[in-house]
Length: 512
Image (cartoon, rainbow, N blue to C red):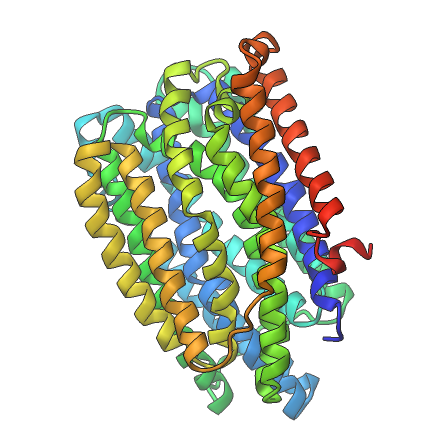
């Protein structure tokens, strides 16, 4: 990639991701209004988590990190035809395995739900609803896995925009499904949430059509090809197995959180979900966008042993991320109650639910810088064929998270689970960055640039603190939504003005 392309790719991906996340907020607002934090919400969120977990294990995470470097190397060394063959063999193998998994999961779904949410067995309505809904939603898994694999091919060809737009389709269809909830007959949890499950399946078909059309138009659609498992694809699958082992470890982390949350009072799963959705906005817009843009670039630089360029790319990415994530973290901690109340405290989602969710949001927000750093440095290890190190770090991280969850949950309840997630993120970030420093592959960001970002953030924090506590009654007088709008607009304006005045905005972000 030529100089400056990281900024362009980041703008494309983060722009589409930002639109998707805003739509996601709209979706979650409708979820909260119609489902609240009751049995229907808990059952559907468990059913939704199943295909999402498998998607991260297959195409979106581990396979993408193994496939993109192998595909790029094959195309460079042996030409487009060989690279297309590699993609075709990978695609065929992926779909064969996923279809078998779907068949087994549909048959053993009651046992799967018992393992994932053992607390549901004490509330038969939640358990039965979760089983039925999961059987409807699980076929979405092979569809979104194939879409994500096609997105990896598009990203390897430098086409980031279409792939980044896929979540927009997801959110639009889920919003449509949520709006149908009031028309659902009956009061059972499964009946209330069924429109969402059906909408999820419809989403998969539309995403397949759109992403497939993009690859066909660009003449990069792989065909059906019986796998021969030659040396290049064997190497790619070996890399995938190591990377997927790390992804599996992280999914175990999520499963443990789900199991423990199911043992807490009803609503805990929903409280954590809504808090996590807010925290995921900066993580997705900043961390995922930069990591997606970095992987092809770092793969080329490590392949060409251009380590100075790789260090420069990482340092540039850290400054990009810091400019956005430091103020976001401080703001999420300071105005968490106003955020959750303004977004979700409507309809079936009560003020008590908002208080519980806001406490979890503060805990999640504390770990955002660490999780962003993990997203940024992991591509360097995958590009340098060091997926085994990432696996070892994942094992340590999950061990720390499980230990902290078991320790903190009896004391802080659902907030303890969020705190454990944040602390374990710092452990992972510290180990990964140390590994890059030891191998001389980590580019140190400018301390002056980071200092200016901190100064602008402190000015923003002072403005937010003044609005909340310096003018008593102002926020409540504007209502939950009006108060939130005032805080976000004021805080963002102060940060950007001060950042511009002291030169804290990264130069490449100002060029367009």
